[in-house]
Amino acid sequence: MVELASILVLSVFAQWLAWKIKVPAILPLIIIGLSLGPLSTFFTPDGSKIFSGDSIFSGDFLFSFVSISVGVILFEGGLTLKISEIRSQASTVRNILFFGPLFTLLGGGLAAHYLMGLDYNYAFLFGALIIVSGPTVVLPIIKNVKPNLKINTILKWEGILIDPIGALVALLVYEFINSGKASDVYTLEAFKEFFITLATGVFIGALGALFLRWTLNKNRLPHYLKNVFALGMVILVFSFSEVLHHEAGLMASTFMGIVLANLKVKDLKSILSFKEDISIILISVLFLLLSSRIEVAQMVKLGWPSIGLFAVVILIVRPLVVWTSSIKSDLTWQDKTFISWIAPRGIVAAAVASLFSLQLIATSSTPEQMAQAELILPLTFLIIVGTVIIQGSTAKSLARKLGVERDIPRGVLLIGAHAGARKLAHTLNANGSPTLLIDTSKSNCTEAKKEGLQVLNENILRDDFLEDFDYSEYGRLLTLTPNHDINLIAIDLLKEEFSDSRVWRLISSNEKKLKEGQPEDQVAFSGKIDFDLLNAFGNSKSQILEYTLETEEILSTFIKDDTIIPLMVLEEEGDIRIIDHTTELEKDQKVFYLKN
Image 1 (cartoon, rainbow, N blue to C red):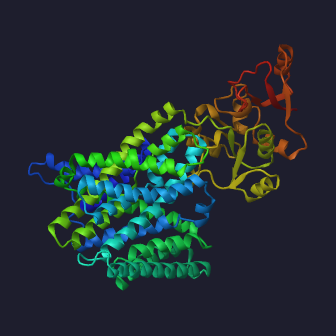
Image 2: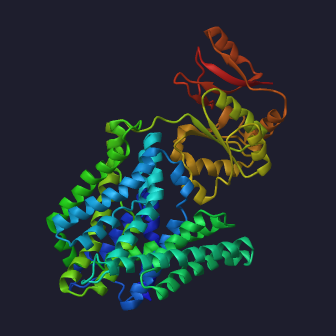
Image 3: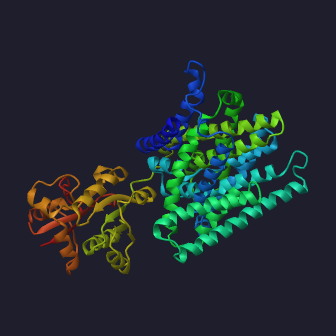
């Protein structure tokens, strides 16, 4: 009981720590797992591990748990793989999704063969395993670095789409290797077994996806059972495929996710959200469990050749992928260099490597095969830990030296899409500051769309929305809702993305009465406009006026005019700044204002 409780508590703690210090969750998970496992043998009196999970998972139960867990994780990854997204991406992203798996498979495999002495079977399996990057490791890095929009787009979509593609390639390589025995590898029999496994997984996966779609679209289930039923279907499809043909389960669960992602399925978004939550728990437990089971002897066996292998992967293979993929693109050499450096391996790589390693060790027929199978997991962990630590810690300084950090974008995020917010948005758009309005009101969003404004019908306070939202085009935040608490919470949640000096909120009516003449930081329009006034202005025929303060005399007269309420000012760089109590108007500035 103590070990089970510990692994769950430590899993949650590792995820929280990763969020707190803004690093990929994979890093604290691996460090805690290694500390409780192989590294703890240096400090315990009898040289045993503090934790290995043997009292919880052992023998076939461990293998079954890892297998089912990886199946669920790959299903969740498959749900993100939409064919339309691959087609619609820029040529560079499409090329990376093609050349990345190909060059990494070949380059990583050949390097593992010649540097580590692995047989071609195991070497190319290793090459396939390190294809996967993933959003869980890439997005925290680019959020911290804030590279230019071209780099941000390429790394973001590569990270999202390479996860299921890389896992699928690794699965195909493993199935091919496992389908042949020592006497008939690369023979007709091996190919036959491989394609039977592939066909079984594809057929059962597609069948399961179509049945789940029919069940959801026909409302055959109560709402509270839909997510649980979907999870049960994934496990059923995985298990049934394994019964029909050994090793077909992973292909079935992955393909089931891909099929569902490309069909119109009711409540698919909530199912994906639920599967993400389940995947976080499974991934956390798997990482702590599997990293703690690595033996010191396995780590020692890696030796100096593994450092050479690591260097080949990040200094030769990755740049080759990026520079080949970006031929005829508009990327500069600085852009290509930075993208070449950012390719951290992720959670799916470790989970799949752990499963395949266990399976290969169990089916090894000779001590040499077992020794090579045992190297797969620590080698993969070496690539994961090395890329996350080295690339994550150096990315910001490298971006600064290469000059690829993005300028503060001119876009303005407006929380609220009521009539007053829409008038502000039109003025911002017309003066070079693109806007996005976010509102929970469908009627407000409908009106905004009719007026040609960019709008989202979303709740800004929803956690997963904030995590998934791409802030790269927006450098300012203005909260304009009638709810004072929501304005304050939104400012608090998003100020790290925009910095304290680029977030503003609408003052409340009560606050305006209590603090007349004493405006606070981050209060828009110097505290002279509350929601009631802004809403009344929005519903009136009045428009936002503009004037250029050409002389000192005009400036002085403008400031002293009590009938004028300044809203925004156009700065020298072409950006519009929301006026607050710290703003000092200057000669030659263009000011946007209301007149009572």
